[in-house]
Length: 109
Image 1 (cartoon, rainbow, N blue to C red):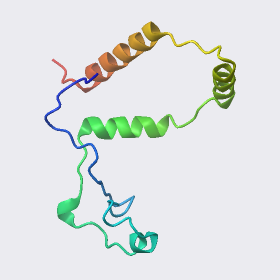
Image 2 (image 1 turned 135 degrees about the vertical axis):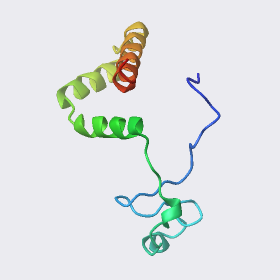
Image 3 (image 1 turned 180 degrees about the horizontal axis):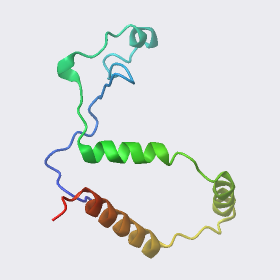
């Protein structure tokens, strides 16, 4: 299932930033010693994030905490075969999150 426009796909392209260093591509990742010696990306190879992408990135960084007990409970339920997925609840949450994100990023009228 695809949601949104498929005309501007950048999936699979190497991305570099000042924080992560140069992009690693199959061509320059053949030898791990070569990877460390790769020069930093040129200014023309830098990526600029949209305000939406930047807000998503900062939101994901602030919610890095997780409930390890819940993860353990779910893992055990999966192992026992007891884990049930409520597709309706997942769809409702996805729609609510998308609506909240759209409302947050839309210009005030």
